[in-house]
Figure 1 (cartoon, rainbow, N blue to C red):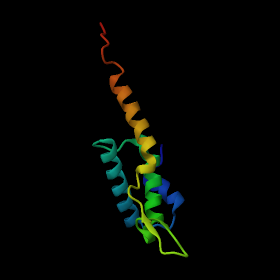
Figure 2 (figure 1 turned 180 degrees about the horizontal axis):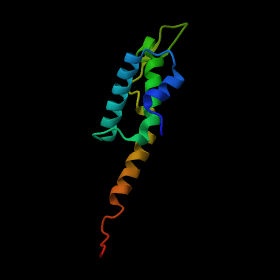
Figure 3 (figure 1 turned 135 degrees about the vertical axis):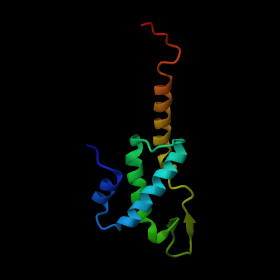
Figure 4 (figure 1 turned 90 degrees about the horizontal axis):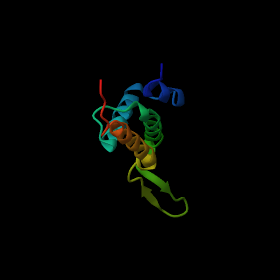
Length: 110
């Protein structure tokens, strides 16, 4: 039986607050569903969700900061936390389209 996103994140972040964890999971899965235009969360993207949740948690004290200078005051912000997973989303969408078109144009006789 595959591990849930919750269980997988707890392996990486055992001390995380469970209410906060659930909020991160809900936010991450909602944003991923919107990105791939799905009504339900696709299991194929569980690993992406786990990594996004961990990144959200790790950045909680530095919300939105991409990098920060020490000698000079320099702060830049993360524009899109899901951007680094665009290749994963693209592969998922291509695979989904191939599956939908697999039997298109095929006539079967019984």
